[in-house]
Image 1 (cartoon, helix red, strand yellow):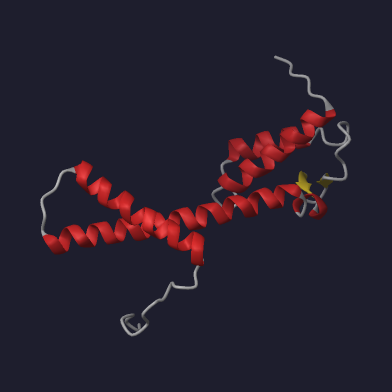
Image 2: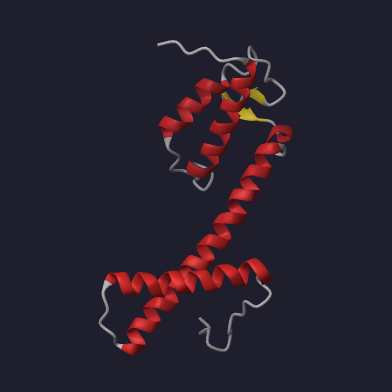
Length: 150
């Protein structure tokens, strides 16, 4: 199979590959997903002929292509920051809602069905999402008196 890309499409492709790589391998050190690394390297190997040598450079020492600092600090970084920000607030609200719902169920000893538990969870998650939208972390407090010292 042969796929032809315009230079503009190729640029979009390297953006998507970089963003995907950040999600899959960005948090890994030794256990990177090799099949994605190989595909990334293959696609990046065409950077020079596609006019992207300002964004992707070949490193002889590592025998690999890498994104340049200028590229990494460009629009893809904005996408990553927007994504991270959204995930942070969504996960924080979700995890706090899960904690509160489980605690409420344990404290009341209620035997409820999954639909009722889900409604309680959604209600708590909604409360947290609204709070974070209005106040960010301003009202979040960790009670260190309750934290056991190791």
